[in-house]
Amino acid sequence: MKIIEVTERTPLLIQQLLEIWERSVRATHLFLSDREIEKIKDYVPQALNEIPHLIVLEAEYPIAFMGIDGQKLEMLFISSEARGKGFGKRLVQYGIKTYSINELAVNEQNPLAKGFYEHMGFQVYKRTENDEQGNPYPLLYMKLD
Figure 1 (cartoon, rainbow, N blue to C red):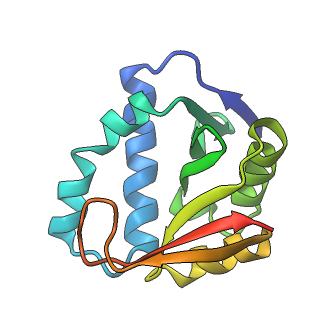
Figure 2: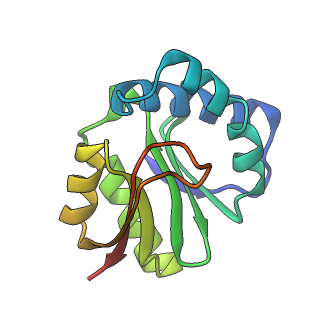
C-alpha cells in the first residue's frame, strides 16, 4: 500500500474514486435514499477535481482517498471491502502530519464515522440541523483535541 498525492486528475482516476465514494456511501450513509445518493453523485467528480489536495491510498488500484482544503479534512472515503483494516486511520494520520489537519464535519447520522474521528482525537464543538446544502441531515463539526 502506498499513499499518493495526486498531481494529475485523469478521467480514469476520477471514475475509480467515484466508485469508491458510491460504495462507501451506500455502506455508511444509510439515512440517504438511492435517489439522494444518485443526486449527490452528480457533484462528486467536480468536488474531486476542485479539492486542493487529493490523496489516494492504493495497492494496484485506489482503495481509499481523502480531500483536504487548508487544515480541514473535507472528504474521506474507504472502499466498502477495505473498511475496518486501518486504511482510514493511516490516511488521517498522514493528513495530520503532512497538512496539519485539525478540523472536519461529519454527518450526525453516521455514528461509525463520528466514533472513528473521536478515536483519532477529534471532538465535537458545533452541531447544525442541516448539511451544507441545506438538507435535513445534521452535521457535527469536530476539531482535533
